[in-house]
Length: 153
Figure 1: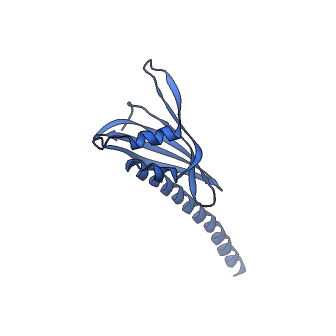
Figure 2: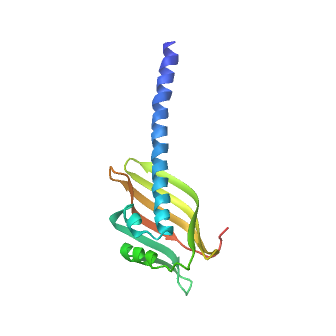
Figure 3: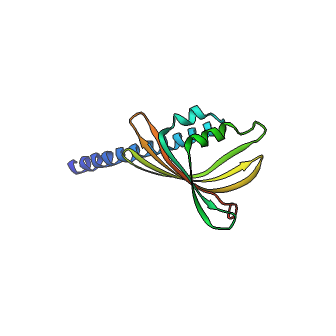
């Protein structure tokens, strides 16, 4: 009987760690979903509430000569660009999947996406979010994405 009790206690202890990890992954995903909710609503105040000051924003893409490029954008310029999109333009970033890793106060989320403009696919790729939990919740500290027009499903 003592052996069975010890095994059950061990399973409970192990399960608690798994459930805590899952709830943190869910919290990270909710932060990213909230980020895109603000993005689609063109709400720069909401987006700013989900990032840390100094957040780095980068894109890997191709230039007109077909060379791979790495572009770094100013986050405040990104926000200004979002709010300046005309109301007549419909845009949506559709997240296709999440792969989230958490270790304490650090998380990484790899999200495949498609970007649609006026109901036509513009491009696809992946986002890689780096997040930090400052005690009040998860905040984006780094975001890099790829953008391509070929190989989109």
